[in-house]
Image (cartoon, rainbow over all chains, first blue to last red; front, side):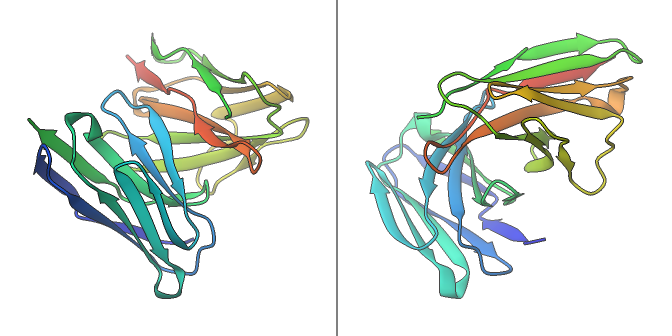
Length: 104
Length: 114
């Protein structure tokens, strides 16, 4: 199956800071998604982004399919952004996750 | 968007007993649902794809007789952990939806086998 690696594995930010999370995949994917899992375990879809760039409020994502990576940008981070961010190829292959802690 | 309801959110059972987890689609018809398992501080692992009216498709290494999946209607898929043992303790999550609705996740079930 496809290997999906994420970096960094852990990230601590001061509230208001910006960050970039990266997702590398071992093979071509055409259905890349980003998810956020809050500290209580609930998973929320953030983006379906097989290619190009999308923005939703303080979050944006860019996928460069030809180079097999995707980036998630978080601007002006808030404490509610804390949790684990996963990228995934469709519903099948999830990345290793980036654990984000935003401190006030 | 698609709304998926998962119950129970937390269950503690004795070793050797069976536990059923329900996943309901509230505002759409789910021909397919996905079941995942997540260990602490690890990623989600797809266990099986549940198909309405037919047998589930299990991922390699997942015991079919241990994790029974039933998807008898377009709004309900169930996962039964049979003869549970402490090593089955985990966080189980379902997901449903589709191209028209997007995919959403249930709130998860934390199973503890004692």
